[in-house]
Image (cartoon, rainbow, N blue to C red; front, side, top):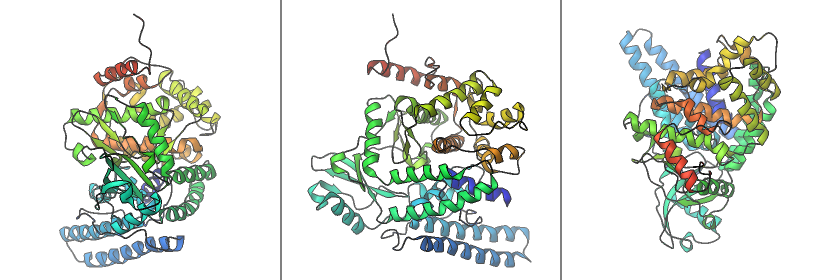
Length: 502
């Protein structure tokens, strides 16, 4: 149970560290039907007491159900015991998904992240929680209409020719409807849930408790900067005007890119709580998993180039890598949705990250690497840690770029990445307790863990070292794949890169 608790804390951290108050048994689950119950909005009274009571109720129901299941199992044979446990897990799973879906906000984000972050969770757990990635219970059309009229300053019919009443997707902060502009353009309209801002503020208050507790478990961690960073990012995510600004930056940079598609926003049809963009189509993550390995590898390469290339090409990092934010097409292109959680890195942070890659990966200079860790406040240069221990712990996170060659990311690798943050029972517990996470690195580590998990699920295969060398500007490697060459040609054609001299 200790390892299970560590995994739940890790999932909470990667979901922006907002909550760790779910009862540790509530993520034990089974397969079940989709949750389709509609909700009018986030329930009134979204204060800490209300939301805490909802979570406490899950724990109480689960405890009662677990006690009953245990009692019935006393005289049962092994097969019947397993049947009883499966029934218990199914009931608990449905309860958790329904409650988190109704609560929306940060609580739902935890469920979303838990559905794909730790590949070590039982498959039935992830199968049920994955419903939260795009299929949360939607709010009623009447509330959508009220929000649109209020935000747009008049009847929405004066701005749109039509809007579908049934949403395309319902997520943690808002839901998306298909619409058509007065000029006949198909659009996607994201409408924020009424009350979600208050709900997230409440959840952020609870994050103090989480990180104070983590500070006791990990003495090297200063929770203050982390909490402040999370608050800043979540506050920005509630502001659709800011999201439109960031999305336009990505969309304009990637116009006509060979495989990266970013829908253009319509600022004139957007407000702080309504975001209108071009309508994009494509297959879901679940559909991608049924495609052949070549298609999955191509999608992974595009996601890899977008996630890490954006840091250096656009100057902004998209920090929300959950499967519902991608759409996949037969031609190999990927549509990237949702720009609410993005981070603009200061130059000194990018320089430090590059210097660490240079030391660990290219030079294999662990003495310099540990000096850099100390200089950014990630780990004190303590004499009790040998270079070999530092290398053993941190090299895991660089494993797929340490050497050149084709390799496959696995679910086991993704799970080990999560455990290296929070499993205090491991051989690396001494270093783990001493590690701190500076504010600028919070979102970066979230997407690292998220992508490892997604690529592990895909079984993504590639020469990650050579892909990385194309992305790292201080290396500026030559194209290593057919897509890489197409991107190089696109960069030259669009003036983003000078043509090589004849």
